[in-house]
Length: 487
Ligand code: ATP
Ligand code: MG
Ligand code: MG
Ligand code: MG
Image (cartoon, rainbow, N blue to C red; front, side, top):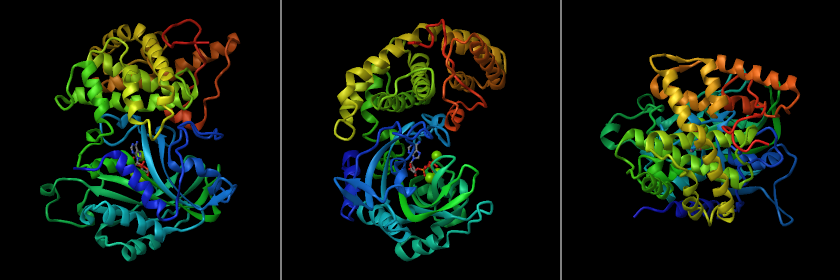
């Protein structure tokens, strides 16, 4: 008799509402008026103007609030936060996930954030304190910041945590930054050890828990926003101190529902069932099939909400990110689940139904979203089978796919480079990405010289990281069908 995910989400919102937080709606996954970000990657994005002191709080109907709470849909496939490679292989990183968050805009600070976080997890939700760990920022010389002693003391004063479970980590884990620039600060995170009791043994204490074990899962990040990272890398102190927290909703659902994997929660069950039905397979029988099913269940969420929030698959910028995710899912279907006809769009109604209360934006545009996905599937299926055959020939007996071959797969068969890399990884083969980039560049120059194309605007920092290449710009294609709906 575990709680449903809907109940868990509601309890989070209500807990903070009782502490005078305003429940605010999720922003779209496409940032509004923020060209520095490709996709919303954290709950705090929509409040950026408040953190930067451009607004004094959250405004609603003439009132200004200093406290807010919500569940934000986030996408992490680009820039500083890119989890695409993890998805499907582990069971707790998604392309699209919900981030539960509570905020203080220049109001309460570390003490209340820590106290209330613990109160919700332990007193309300009944998590076992022995399984909880808190991490704090150890400081950083380059940034001239000392260890966050204050947070260590607050964890000791405000909670019943075992002092041995308070661990110090460096900037990589305990200093949160939205992107290359912008609001940031030290953070303190909560991790839950979900290993079975036999494996936890009797030994306890800091050195003995391996924080890299995926079963010691990070669930909640409490960020203390105090700085604004400047383009030159320096930190500027913000006029006010803010709290920005983010809890992985799918992860806390897994923990509270007693599951080892996010995919075993009621959030993913309907999608996995539907995929099983379409492919005539059962989740849990075979790892290779399971990975494909997880990827597909994950990717339909990112693709559907992106389209519903206004980004259609295309050859540039955000649209190309969506197309890449989509083609990745279709390839998994074809190659691993023997789904040779459009199938991905058939998952949309299941998802829309599931989210009709929380994020109605999808059910309101269900037909449109389905049509966009279906036509994208049709176009990629024209070349996918042949492309896979060709890839297999190219990889046969080699340790590396050449830049020229990768370019051919891209140019003629519509294989984004990350898809070729993924397929190569599955076979233990490398890809000459540099050689590929060189050819992409040459093509771009040819196009420029021909004067036919507008070079896209997608070379932002985030975009470069998306593609994992140095210089990667799409210029459009003049001939083929492989890339679909070209204008
Ligand atoms: P991780 O170390 O697991 O990648 P993170 O440190 O990158 O997480 P934060 O930026 O601190 O994540 O985001 C706040 C919370 O959002 C995390 O504590 C985690 O619970 C959740 N989260 C982050 N990335 C993902 C993801 N890709 N899928 C699902 N939940 C996520
Ligand atoms: Mg991460
Ligand atoms: Mg982390
Ligand atoms: Mg974190």
